[in-house]
Image (cartoon, helix red, strand yellow):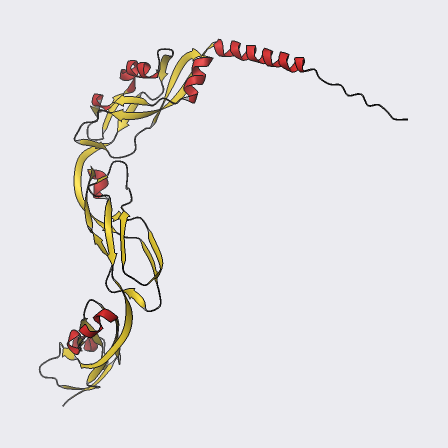
Length: 313
């Protein structure tokens, strides 16, 4: 024999009745008048023309309001921004500026809605750190991550045009601004010259740039190695002393781009040994150094790195 299972089904009319009851309950609740505190964003208008906000001010205010649930629900969904009139600022000695929000209560009431009754404003006083509008020329710095094909490299440092930019803003912020940073540029497998337009990163909302984009250029070339023997000069040696050096010439090994290879000659470099440095450090040898070289030459190496010498008697 098959057992028959009886299932108790809840009629749809039950759910309809529940829904209708819930609707009328919400309608009753939202029709009632409530008193609560709402938080609204604020902006500052009518700032003095020669002044700027130096540090971040208060961006929200808490207002006690009285209204029906329907009205409160509406304002909680749409956060109206309140404009505070900064032309009513008062000076507090040398510590900054302030104004009493209570004095702008009527204006705030009109901005919110006549359907709300504004009571107390929690923040009774607003402070603004205002500074004199100033200008300053600031250098621009790059943030580069370059990887080159084997044998290729920059022939000279990246050129940024313009290399400095006139900025304007509050004096306090400009005093601490040492440079402007470019957006980061990463390039891999480089085998030809680099030319790009890059944007200067924003510093703050109150600092404005005269120029927002700059050009960068980097000349890239295939590098090769060159070398030759040359003489060197001993400097800071007393006139009464004569020395013999071993060796008498020095080998210069350098890297240079192929396009500039034929421009390098033995007169392109000047190598000196400072006799005084050896004496002060009690060294029995001289240390050769390159003091003059072409800008397009890189990775200069001297062989040997020490020059032996004997004082003639």
